[in-house]
Length: 526
Image (cartoon, rainbow, N blue to C red; front, side, top):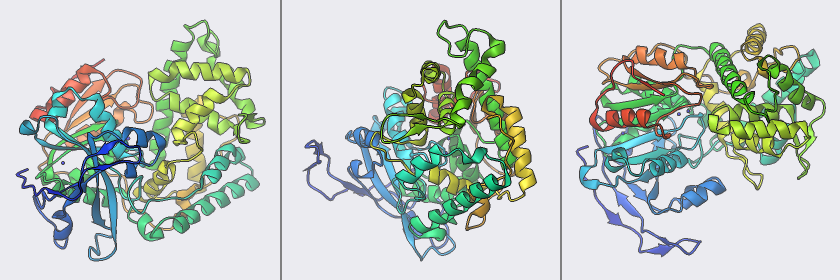
């Protein structure tokens, strides 16, 4: 939060058919556009593989995806990659792909490969959404929009799965992590150790897949994708964690980069503790912006005095620690953890502030549907009670991307610093030194924070938002400096900005991707 001389062989493999909904489905088409560019030793078969593009509905993992994937503008395929690049002749896994073709084929430049971050979010759903939002733009005319689900994620096979839907509901309802007593810490750590074990037991290829889910291996998959799409060089748009993918790709394959837009950057040098604290500061900044907006309203749930909003907020949400409120369906209750998750979800974009204010007002009246809706949105729980695998994938990737923290003194210090950085998230209990799931992860990390060292990289565009709660502005500045790129500053309170409706940001980013014209240094959009 998270591609050209081409020769195509088109083979229609199916006659026109009909979907389960009765709507006509375009025939599947097999294309072989690779190999293109440099092919690493032992990987020729993967780099030259044909892709069969067909109906996207079988790739959907949520009800919402099924509806949006029915459009005939989107076509989906599977990309085969080695499970272990050290043994490319061994086990093979597949990645889900979605492509919305350029609307002006005669002026087509190539593929715009997209990753929305997370890690764990669906690249397929993001590609189809962005293609719709950019439908009349030059960017949309000149590029195929291509989303991919990284290994182990979403429609890719096998996919990571750690908790059942019922277990995820139970985890959300449990506020045990607030108990910093020795017994509470032991209980939390036992749950975290059990979670790590379930990830191995319930995931296809178990520990072997977990060991290769990190950024190190995903960028190798991206280069296979680049070649199979027929692109000599990669044109890439990465959001949030997707900026780490872009950065690592640039380090690994610098000569294969055409253009990179990295929006909502992770600081490449920051360790997991400093990143946590910086994110806490970012969400506190967004919360403060929300409260300044709120106190101007007669219906502000937090009152009309800026000096009182924090205490008023605590008075509303902290009682849930001891007395969660019944939702009135299936025995679910709104916990303190779910309430704070709902608030965090709403702080990602100013458009959700009205909903957040309503949810807090409702909570004062013991009504919890609005906040539960926000929390369910964050956890990607659909109306039927099914979860996506995003949360499990998030943990699996981060546990191999960063060195594990097993020093309880360091964990305690991190939690204390986090409470100080984000007082609105202070639950009023002592900080806990309990270790998280990564401390018990069954495989070692394959990456670690560092300043990227890249030679011969073309100019890169980094978009950084001044009030971004999840990936603070300075992280984008630091990444651009490390890559020798240009920062586009967006003055707003939201997470990421490109192709989200701001003409200044969209025009600058699109012009760069199409013409390779880097915006002037110091450019600012509002």
